[in-house]
Image (tube, rainbow, N blue to C red):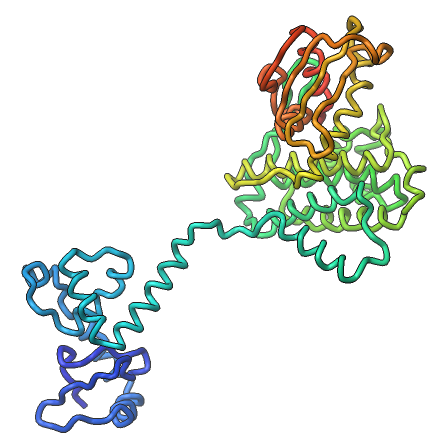
Length: 427
């Protein structure tokens, strides 16, 4: 069976059916109806392939020379072949004029052009394809207003709940290359800036190790107990646990570390929720210091966000700061821990520094005494910081010299407070 000439044939779909309302001429014969034509060619795949192959060889108007540019009439097949380029605004002026004139006359091509334009619009969406980072919180709030939880997550644990969920969402599509991407953990030590090289999987192992301190304080099983039975004997601090866990792994950490970290974070939130008003009796030991459970959960939320930023930077992916109400809690935690750090440092002359933190929903002015024994001393300096920048300073990701956006007064007093803030950081 010989297929009709493709130059006398309108565009056909993949099933051999006519995509327009037009008909084709059959030399020496009658004009068959759409049903007759469909029945005639639907069962003959070889003939359909021949039609398709010949239709693909319809010459482009540019390849044909001066046809399009000179204003010569273009055939239906050529105009239909230009619809994709027209939808992408890739046609010449003459081609565009010819296509648009044809669209006013051919309903089938007009429908196809509309579908192509809609598809192009999806390919070039101006807004990002990522979900709004506040979507999870808004959905939960809406659900909880309709049916309050029997056991709600306490407000001192919701920042940890949110930050672990955000990090888990970042990790879910990582392939092997991303899990082994190099990451540098940074903090501020006695000698200034310090660091430790690891991988994305190594960072999650670090979070798993330190979160285990909170887990054991709550009576949960330490996920590293077996792995650290020998290596971690007598070591209880975050850095020692992490190093021991890394040494206990015979091979580099892989994606498999994500499951135990995620399961542990879920158990921590659930158990913290069950503690209710009894939480004030719990303390979490970090080796050389301890934190109340409320502050320990905020500390873990803080570190989860900071290391999530480290991971996102390693794989070149954007990552937003915490929600404002959570960010405010993290700022408040760092401010409350500053007096202890200042008291443990070299003696400082009496005086206070007014620290202004922009972007904190809990108030932005904090009076920091250089000597905690003299909290009512005169103000000797004032320093202004952005809230996110202050947290990055407290995480050791920004040096004291780079942190302050505005300074006024005693430079030595300002340096003392900023250095104490950076000293809050650790591995």
